[in-house]
Length: 235
Image: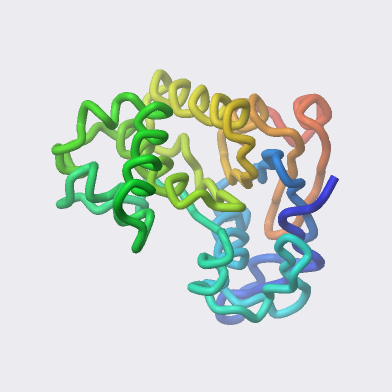
């Protein structure tokens, strides 16, 4: 199976503090991988390295067989990387519809309407909130909007930054049910970073455990559930 994303021996630091140390992982095309870890493990840094926001001091970032290690963030996004972050993925003062339209850039006319309709079919709640400002949505609805805004660009690789963060259990369930549905219906290729191990493992094909900037275990969801590193629903 072809690799959509490969991190090969990635190391990075913040000022003098090492954040990632020789991290290697991959995401197969059409599959979902997850990186599990507690606060401070290096999960956010890892996503920033993929996006080019944080520089990799050593190692390579490969996307669809191309070395993108030294490319700027805007070029990586243009090549098909999108990120879903509930904290920064929406514009609070803009309507739901305008948030979605920003996600497709310069596309307009029939193509825009087609993509919007596809999004509304995946996220019916957003159709009901079109004219509503994003800042007035519930936490779960904002996460849905951030996910929809990332997906409407039809990315090759979707990065999900802690989609369960700050949500009530019932909304966590809804968000992950949506991710599972997208995986089945749209063949999404994604990398999820999460603290909520059980929910991430319910949708992923392969997973990694990150501790203090290092991968300490990797395997299938079944292997990860049985390993000593996972002691509770939150690592």
